[in-house]
Length: 162
Length: 115
Figure 1 (cartoon, rainbow over the protein chains, first blue to last red):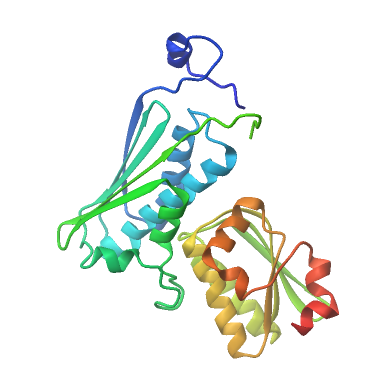
Figure 2: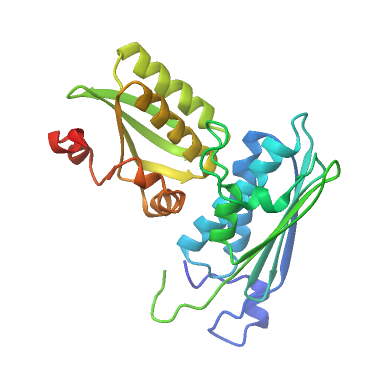
């Protein structure tokens, strides 16, 4: 589980220690609830190319799920496409979720945790993205769309193999 | 997501399996509300032991059940969330309003129902 290595990594690795590698994927999907699981599982599988712990992979899943769910719920009441790209640069994972939907009027307000918005929606999406990743950046233009970029570093854990 | 329920000692115990997200939250809501209304029982125990994923949409559905049950003077508790589900519950603050137990037995104990 923790020694998995791609052929490429094996070639560039100087032996034994995982040095991380560079890779990139792009996914494009209709903004539908049934695609949210596909998005998070795909990105989680991609992130697993470097040795994120199982807990960290779960956190990445939640963050991706929130970003893609936002696009489904908020960006596209009439439907549209979501573009998801993920990049591994050494030990850094970057994920970008981009829509061309209705955009966010007030990004800083949207980022605030609001426990009691409409019933059933908790306003926790951005809170989870921020908490479970190392950082997050939101670019949004009303009427043009939103791009959420988030990143997480895979830190070597000494003495633990989770 | 799969769901079933059983009446145990006057409580509706819901056992949830799989992913609780935007795609399944509505089905979860309908199932739980329907079972409670049919049995006229608003003492709910949500067993999450076999839940593999929860995000804010899933939590929203749980909070929504909490509110509906509270309006009917009922109770709700969560049982056996796996570690990654527990961390989402903790971060959301949901643990402050819905008690979390390590087993159905503990959730169903008379002391627990007094809370």
